[in-house]
Length: 107
Image: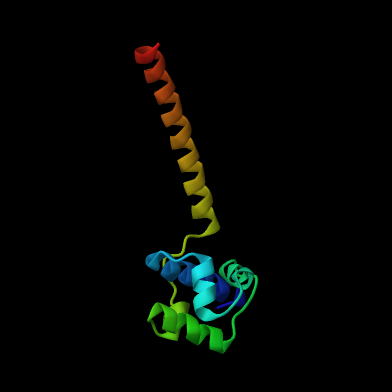
């Protein structure tokens, strides 16, 4: 496994566990005593974490450290782009349909 893949997995899992708890980056950063900017860099794979930070994250999430490195079904960039495209298409179609209904029944 390459370092970039390991960073991607860690980033995904931190965001995943933070999301499960409904925590903002600010709340998590305060809980583990790091800056919000540093947490954002970790979550985007720009920065790496110390072993102490890993332990703090795991304790905060009430999980074992290894779980932060467990590969999950993290979406690839291709999947993310496909979903964005699909959401855009649905939004445009929905907006167009609303315009048609509005013109038909409200004008």
